Image (tube, rainbow over all chains, first blue to last red; front, side):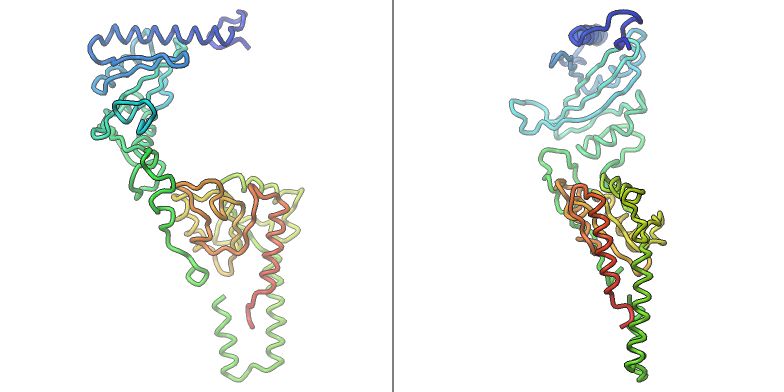
Length: 194
Length: 169
């Protein structure tokens, strides 16, 4: 088996070669985004462990997603993942508390795009990506369930993992690990009563 | 086993309970318990790796059929024994309680493994810390997961319990 993205019969690329190729592809994506959105839409970017993270402003998120998906040069057709990080009391962190992470993959370019949207605790709203990527529907429900982020325009924003009558968002860092007594709140069935 | 209490009392009230009747009732009870203990039909509430171990117990190497418990029912209405194998979460507990209520009398419950018995290592907001808090449990099986021999042992203990249960006297 030849490595992914190599020609049949070509030498199998090493790990370092693949890493460098992926990093170059991600830098091209970042350059394309900065060309297309010259204003404040792209708030910044960082290279962590040979991967590029792109900070996108909340207002420009949908435009960026549409562009990444439909531009014939990029074609990020695959929605890999959407998740959220709570940076409460994170060592060395300053600024907004929540970071929303979008992972996209382009099959034609064999490249990933990692977008990050920063959200303040008192304004946890973001436009839904489920029109751009239908696969984002349940991922957004999960983030809403566990972090309490509101996705404006989502067709069906309900809890997906926790019970419907659950209160609170348990993956936030200030939520007690053992819960708030939900796990002890069931009726007790004794042998006489059942 | 609420049905049987009035029979005993009614016989006593009518002056029917003589030594002969009592010994006959005891004999009948033995027959009933013999039937019950050798035809325990389990319902498997398997939510995690314990139920995989349970499959091994059911299959030919350990062969739970030797104890009359090979007929796994997939409806609680036809089962006598509820085997809770695995983690029970907040969302699953109402389901488990409904299943227990749907089972006809007489019924027994085995809590299999650390998670079902006490929550195991999952001491979190979504895990029930032992199903016995909300559902009556007869036998606990320790282990993570328990070996098939433990399950067989638990079934034999349950059989002893059934054998000793007072059905008529």
